[in-house]
Structure formats: C-alpha cells, structure tokens
Length: 267
Image 1 (cartoon, rainbow, N blue to C red):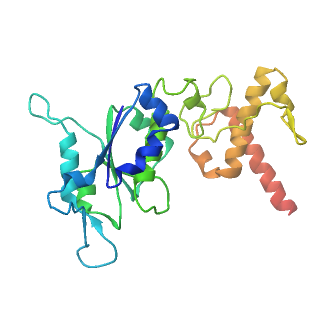
Image 2 (image 1 turned 135 degrees about the vertical axis):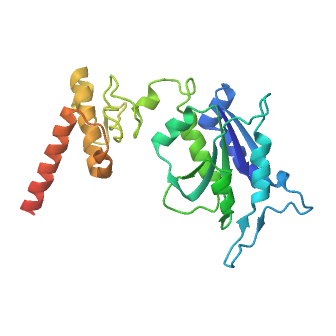
Image 3 (image 1 turned 90 degrees about the vertical axis):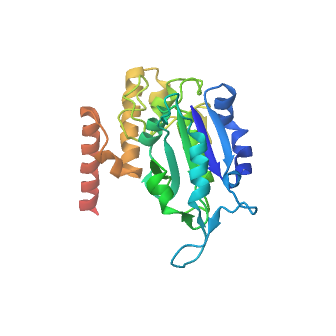
C-alpha cells in the first residue's frame, strides 16, 4: 500500500511517521508514505497556492492549478498511453463521514492519494473534477487536513496484513465488519468492542468480572457478546439499527429495551 499525501506543511508528518503503527508499517515494508509539498507544483516565483474567493468573503482558497499538477504528476501512464485508476481523496468537512467500512475499502487499494485541505477551503473544481472521493473524519472543523490524513492512514495501515502482531486484532475492533471470532468480542458487525481487563485481578477495590477468571470459554464468549451489545446500547444506540445481530444478541437488546421501559414507568 502506498499513500501519497499532498500538503503545504510536509514537516507536519515528521513526528507522526517516526512513531507507532505508521513507523512499524513503513519499516516492515507494508506501507509506503510519500509526502509531497504542494508548493513544489506552483509556477510563480512566490510559490503561491491560494487566492481570494470569487464573490468575496473571509479567508483564502487553495488554487486548483497546483493541486491538479500534483495529482497528475503522480499518475503514471501505462505503455498503451492510458492512465490507471488512482483513488484521490480530498479531506474536507464536506465529505462523507469516515467510518470503519471506508477504512476497510481503502485497505484493499494498492495506492491512494490524500489531499490535505487548508484555509477557507479548496477550489470546488478539485472536488468535482480531480478527487474521486471526499472524506470527513467528523462533524467539526480543523485548520487543515493533515490531522485527518494521519487518522486515515493509521486506521487503514492497521488493517494491512502483517502490520499488527496478531492478525485477529483488526477483527475484534469496534465497528469491524468481521464476523464473531472465537473470543466473542466482535460479536456482530457494527458493534462497539467489549470491555477488556488484565492483571491484577483486583486493583483498588475494583475486581475483574469473575466470569473472565473462570476458565469457562463458552461463558466468557457469551459474556463478551452480551457486554458488546450492552455497551453499544448505552453509548451508541443508533449503531444497533444497522448491526447484524444474531438471535442471542437480539434477545439482549429486547431485554435492555424492556428494562428501559420499566424504568420509565417506575420513574
């Protein structure tokens, strides 16, 4: 997997690429991350990348010419003269919300270009005629797309085979589309993860649930699945509407709803 990141602040990525998962993925040859300075694709002596918006208004807008040149320089023509498909993702608040499913889709690509927006925005012709997708990492506004690019790259990189020490780890993540694994944590598509505990079994009066110490793997699996559903119900109930629940999990949801209804009556 190769990421080509187009930004006006290439130095921003120095620390991020030197630590953690992205460093491990790069060192292991699983991912290649290439940072491109947008100013290198300008043609004026001042290396101008932005201009005032037509129609007036506050802020500056990234110009289309440098961005088109940058992306076109990354597209290499095949011997027959055609240009291969190249996913070009514009990171902006107007894009579709970045979810685990999108990360899994991207992980199946061999190469992706990430355009980091900045200032008041990017010339709309970049979004309509250059980018193949537009992604937002949340309903809030950042000063630029660099942090968003880092989020996308890490979430995709951890899904690549060989990056994580345990190949089952991505399957157990919250929001994973993987089916239930032998431990039971990823009980259904779209659920939050179950709680996790480690040694010591008691810390400051807080004990690990007895079922996890029982050695009964069937009971542990059922507990984890129930906890995943319960946690999702309490924290992100909207996820249950699209989650692929089995019969046991549907029964858990029904119990939770009945309990909530009784509480409402009692209240």
